[in-house]
Image (cartoon, rainbow, N blue to C red; front, top):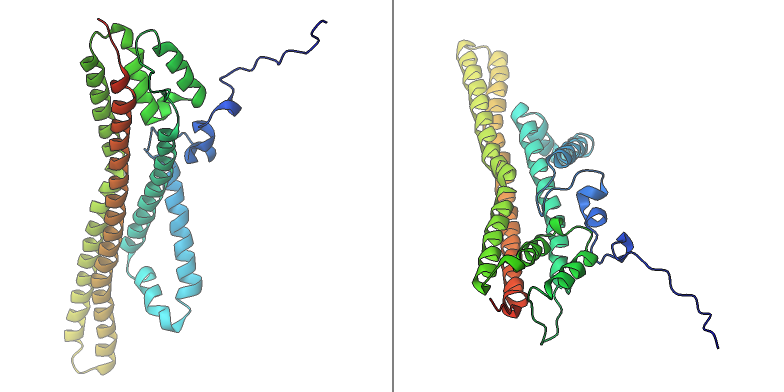
Length: 294
């Protein structure tokens, strides 16, 4: 009897719907229509826009909800009446927060690659020049772009050179070199936000100098007022306003810098753990399975 069953149409293994991890659809920057930064690096333009919007939202809340409240008026004055440096401080603070948030989301996506079965898990499976091409093809069917996943990019670079490598130590050296490049990439992704942590206290000190300058200038006016109590009272108000600017700009800047530094330290620790896990994965699933005859 003739078999009339229609064969299942061939499906391209590289179709996006087959990918277990799709960077172009899962990366937060790509989803928002911006060019995604490499690995955990954040797109500066996207985070700039996000920081500006967060700053505007923050000052809208301060202006409309906090300052009209008599009990919280001093908080509103702290951010609205203390000179231009306060606005710039908050903008840099929210820009830095945006960078760290994007990096956190991108790190979460990168960590998912550790859960992929990039290398066959069978105990008797070995890696050699003959078994490498199917493994590379397997990796390419798991994700849409290996170049955008730190772990898979590292594995692909090592296995792609396997035919030209004579010793297992050579593969280990390639993985070690790539690990150093990845670490430098991660470190450089913090350069901008680290600059903000340095710049924010400087802005606070500039606000302090401006506030003290106003206070001293107003105090000299008070001394010239003589016995005119109304003039003295008006001058003293300017003195206290200048002192408030001097101390509160520094206070806000130091608090913002402290918060950012704590978040940076935490996120750097998470990224260091991820890099260590990538190193362990490569040694356990690549180096330990190599069998080179040359």
